[in-house]
Length: 277
Image (cartoon, rainbow, N blue to C red):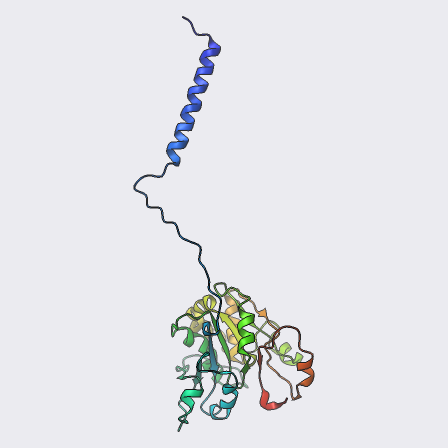
């Protein structure tokens, strides 16, 4: 019995189609010796005050007079913080260990150049606190916060504000000065160190890894905050502006500034010794 050419064509089409489906099913089948690992999505717990680590720049000369400022916001039961000094304070008070943050002595910075004509080399030591605190590998730190010994932080507000950001991403959070002259002199994109600033843990670890080599490139800068800002700029990270940080480059009564404060939370105040509240 002869099969017509059209029937042969239909039969070939059917066989080809079945063969294609066979190949598709064969290649999509997972080999028996391949281990499939299924991971559940990462669940991030809410950020708490214990996830914030404060690093305070001070000196053996200024620290005795700045203790009252630290006690305004530091709570040994809920706040994690370190105070970095250039050298030990003689005759420390016995109560300091229970009411103030632990004291750390900064590492030697004599190998780093400093050429700004009207500044002091302490800017290098203070800038390098960023690296020294990260290198301690403290556990469960999501945010590193930096400030001076006369910076007063509003910790609950700071916690709420930083909780709006993903600590696993690269963030540099702070604010510039209230003084136009100071901001123009330094930068409108730099967080002023006295007002305090925060760096997410993921960014801080990368910054710490390159910080020493970066410091070598900026001997001509004045302050510590300018060095941190410049090294972050080399990493391609700009400032995330939070107006609640206050450098307070003002003198006299602060009532006007505080009464006109934006709706954003008040995060810090600096230079209170030179101001009237």
